[in-house]
Amino acid sequence: MAIPEEAAVAASAVSGARFATRLALPGGDILADEPAEVGGGGAGPTPYQLLSAALAACTSMTIRLYGTRKGWSLPEFRVEVAHALIPGAPPRDRFTRRILFTSPVEPEQAARLVEMAERCPVHRTLSGGGSEIVTQAAALPPPAPPLTPADPPGEHVAQMERLSER
Image 1: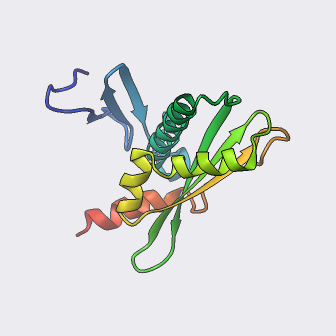
Image 2: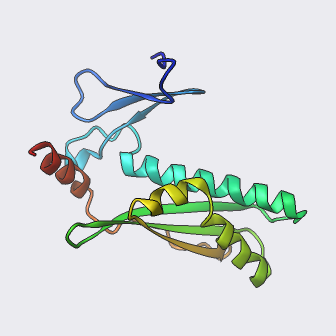
Image 3: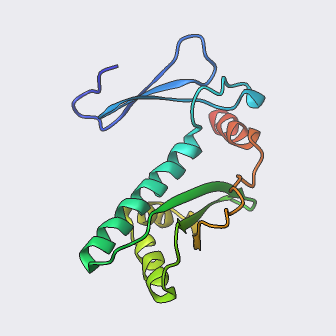
């Protein structure tokens, strides 16, 4: 699918699929979908996984840029992000983010990197809209337990259905 010149990304429904959506992006297309247990085909990440991926990517880029500017030799690291819907009126979004290092980082340096993570552009965008973003820094070994969304897979679909009724 070609991206219209005025769009950064373009989304189009995949024929015959309930939720599958082809996303045209610079660098190549990707497929978004919902899990099979909520009626999707499970053919790609969910919209909230894509949003979480944007936060993880921006965090990683910001930390690397900051480390380079400071002349720090950072160990390898990865950024994990999970989304959850926090009940309330209205419900709120929470993004839990972990920065996992392959070797120890000085506590002061880790604290500064967390501070920089909270300044990444996607973090600022999400937190400015009332979302809550929780950031954690940790060492990779031993492996940290995987992050899982706190809300059931069907909640995102239920939200879309409620909003489409208005």
